[in-house]
Image (cartoon, rainbow, N blue to C red; front, side, top):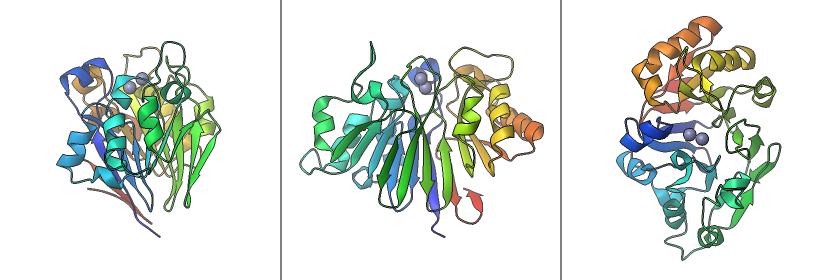
Amino acid sequence: MVTVKITFLGTGGGRFTTIYQTRATGGVYIEDKIKIHIDPGPGALVQMHRYGIDPTKTDVIAISHSHTDHYTDGEVLIEGITNGGTKKKGYLIGSKSVIEGFNQYGPAISKYHQSLVEKSVSMDPGDAFNIGDLKIIATKSFHNDPTTIGFKMHTSSGLISYVADTDYDDSLIEEHKNARIIILPVTRPLGAKIPYHLSTKEAAKIVKSVKPEVAILTHFGLKMLYEDPEYQADWIWKETEIKTIAAEDGMVVKIGKDIEFL
Ligand SMILES: [Zn+2]
Ligand SMILES: [Zn+2]
């Protein structure tokens, strides 16, 4: 089995964690035979430099929606993939708001940058994108950018699910079932629910029903950081009996037969 590597280039989310960079907002980098960069928010490029990831080697940039903590470094990273716009290469996939624009949102990536890559693809929930042996399915999301999508990736080491910013909905369980690893954006801690985002309690509900091998929490808002993401992860672990980890900036996960945290 090929080992798939996930690097957390950022674990922050929400307005003030992003503005003050209390945690970084560089997104999630997945290296299989194909390399995918999901949600490159502010500082993604700097984080890649810090952790020794070459921005010219990315194959797919995947952007879940048109909020700044998810897309702002997308254009410079497209320049990375395409050798400064001189070589047509790589793919951009994203929500309708990111690629085409939707109501007041987007397009988050300029038409110019979209023209530099091999293909720029607007995805609705249920749509599939295939590249090499990798299949990425867009999943439902319930967020204030109504076109937001998550990404379910059929990798060489099984199913990895990236749940995008979303409110809780029972249908998310069906959307992400069979995931070996589920990555959840838990913006808010216990007792501090806000609309359009997941809190610890709701994340536990998803983890309990999806039953992944491991659940990884990320996208922490300031209030979540004050309430200790590790405590919140332990709470979910106890509640669900499923291994739950709070991601840290720079954390690496290796997925082969076993799942290893570095
Ligand atoms: Zn966000
Ligand atoms: Zn958002």
